[in-house]
Image 1 (cartoon, rainbow, N blue to C red):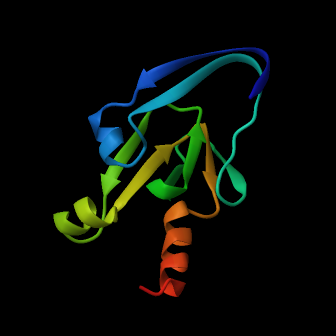
Image 2 (cartoon, rainbow, N blue to C red):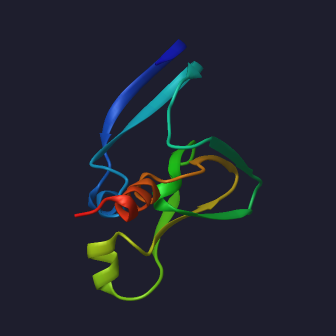
Length: 118
């Protein structure tokens, strides 16, 4: 939902962002107004000054006003990357704003799975 003079476009994210768990497509908003978004957990805002860097696990990413960020692989092995979704982070450099969620859906699934007997 939004208010004000906002317009949006659905954009193809690219194969690299799809592989990073950021989805097949994303919404790009422009104009003046407000935008409501939801997340799992609280949404935090990180304002980066010129040259300041911030690295974030891909499962916590919500939004940014920057089109320039890097997708990096960390950790061990291709197997954990492909089958476990592990080892992908997003690297931002200011000036920009990054919005992230304090929890990830995967951690909720892991918590529930510990208590499900099967």
